[in-house]
Image 1 (cartoon, rainbow, N blue to C red):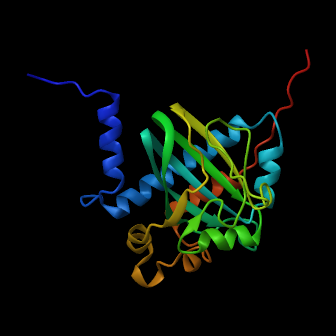
Image 2 (image 1 turned 90 degrees about the horizontal axis):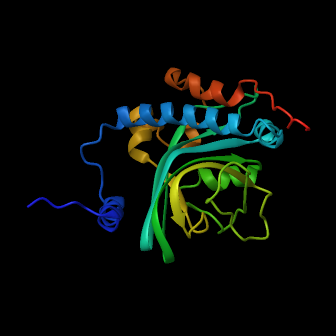
Length: 236
């Protein structure tokens, strides 16, 4: 007799998978996919915010950018989230560095039910915020405040006194998720991907983001520096 898995079963399997390593994953191929998906996410988020110059102004001032092109959330009272992405730092020419690979994860208790996929772009506005993310393990709300941009809903800001001063987050969501936010989420380097792309001896994020030699990342860097003009809302 065949059985059809319901939403609770799917969510349960998803939560189990958060702790399971991807043993068969080709790290180089995975890294290329993350870069390609990050390009698409940057273009989508920038285009969605063309009605206001806020994002573009913040991007011009940003010390760095962290893009999580697919941030998956699922929960049945106990929630779990994860997503892989890239961190780039502004260089002296006004462009951006090579991408260092990171993973964002979180777990939470409370009233929450559903599944959701988000695209998130963090604009890091201060040197303090940049250094906090570069560090081996960064936790939202612990030492750097988060304010949320107007693109999308469901990604909530941390409630710290530094809100809005260090990092601004913009997101696009697909799906429905009741409850949860960014508070308590952890970002740490994907050491396996960094080593696969840059070599073990050059896999430290601080070393990676001090260069811009990776040819495959050219489209990613261009996606952050290309000109885009906001269109003022039409007055009727």
